[in-house]
Image (cartoon, rainbow over all chains, first blue to last red; front, side, top):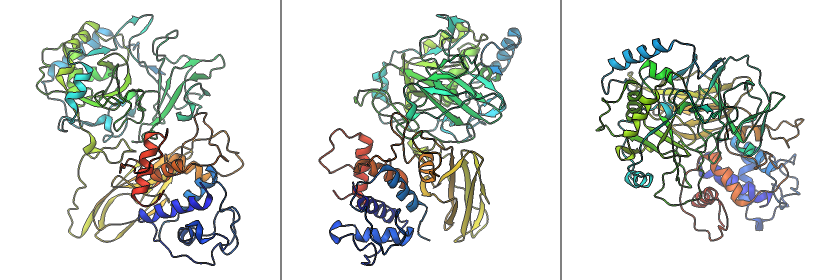
Length: 88
Length: 498
């Protein structure tokens, strides 16, 4: 399971639960994450509600670890940030 | 310290008191939905806790006959408690009440530490052990801190020379709350439930009524559990075997008037509140605390009641949330004032909510703020039994009445998390029962996460944990049934796409 796939799972769950609204892809966000990841829309949704991903300072920079295996600690933090950033 | 056995009260006075009180009771005279049972000065869980719920009006479980046939219809009831000693130890599961000043000592877990609450706990060096100091059975220890209203329970507990204790597993319960353990976790009992609220205690009989469900055992259970149980202890998937958490009720048609005074209070409780299957053991053994004032001859008469006189009860209709022991005892009452809705706010664990419940204008937004007590954290909100949010401040649109529960929890420290880092995310998710550690009690900070594990965490976080939508994937392998169910739920909601 990769970091970007974890973000996908979290975003889709938040949308399915009704706590977020799905956003469309924005190519300016983490431009090194390719469309072939299948997760750019979910990434845009996550960033829309939470802000920059853990380990990054701006959404326009590269996300170097997008394709690395997700650790339990990183996933817990990413999930917690999502749960505490519901739709205003 | 007040032990639950060997009370100093004069035996004659106690016996007369029991006779007087019980003699005044006619069958069915017990108040339904009476106030919570008490121990010392503490109430044993809120009035609406599943242990304190009368079940006389609940429907019969659809598998009632199957389960009772499996137990054996001729199996007689046995009071697994009494006066005196058996095999060198007191008869029953003892408990002790301690003040809040009781020193806390370390607990060293030797088997199920990953599913146990960490010490220290206020276990006195001379705390009574089930089976006696040399007993070789379950060796439960039950301690009630009556000032802080916390119940501590250990399984297979052994004292160490330095005052600490070894135990296979242990759990702490706020007596003010309706919290359950994370699903799949044991406690000091096989069903993952507290033991103390299911004990028949002599002081209750002296007062004339046991106003709670009792705990019981059978030898053959199923690898499954029913709410409020959180854990099971069987390798059998035979659906005819009773699952942990099953609640049996003595049929109303059973004549209990002829039973002697002490014994009669037990079947009355079994008729009104029933008994909850909580462990593997001898068939139809009902648990109680030892006390030298029990009349063992009286209690032996309970053997005339057998499994055929019981029916299994379906408690699913009173479930507020599968993660809470709270019961839905009544619909949200309509506000007497036109244009207003009723907001009911309760807390689980230690903390407060402002401004609390009351009447709110229809369509208005009620903004609630949860503040945990010292040493506790705010875990999450449940609205009408469903997970609704994780922020301490929560806004709720009052187009209709709502029942809100603020869940507070104590942090579950993982030994492998550096204390220098503020692990708020992990603390809170563990407190909410979303994340769980490894068997050895560690969190596994840098370990990678599998898709199924991630699915389970998300399902727990958003309230899909107990939903079963089947699973169309073909690669289950050795995956645990609960995780597989959670994967299926995420597929149903188009979160997991294979």
